[in-house]
Length: 248
Image 1 (cartoon, rainbow, N blue to C red):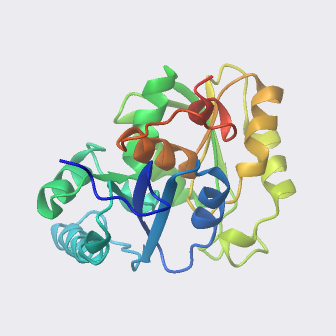
Image 2 (cartoon, rainbow, N blue to C red):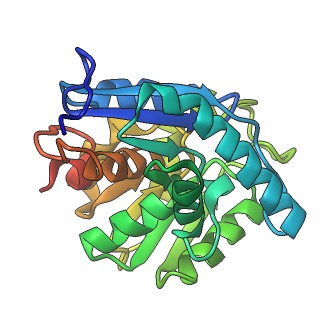
């Protein structure tokens, strides 16, 4: 049976779910998507309670409703592109439940990061984020539960009455992120991880890989890689976004 295609989506048609304030994910994907691959977005409220049964149930119900809004355009895969909001253990549990409930392949950013790191064969990490310390430590624990060791992590404290002068994560200048990397990355790290789908980093990735000598993975590159891996066209032919997307 021939898969129904639109004029512009011969390679892949991706449903993309982002938090309400996120403007970076779509902008970076627009620069990364190969010819014949398209992304179509829907916004969903953030869920701060990821620990209680009621909180997790509310997240899953909201996510199921949002996926249903994307279903009529017949996506090859749907991505829940929120890093902190998808850090459940095991990492693939939310993907599996949403796939079963919706009948569509679903990936999450947190699981995409785990899969990307395993694909690259790295375990020891330096990490930069826009987050406050509590979210950073939640990320460290999430990664540790999946076999990864965090050698260094630093965030900007955005969103927690921290010292950062940028009220929105998307407003962070690239030179501030580069400086954070320089302050944080430590020898022995096998990769640099830049997390949060609203944290701009795409123009830095290839240069940082050359300078640091290790793969650089962002929330947005990992999520796109996982989506394309599940699409008919696969991940071939990408020319930017680091070793993960270039297949180098």
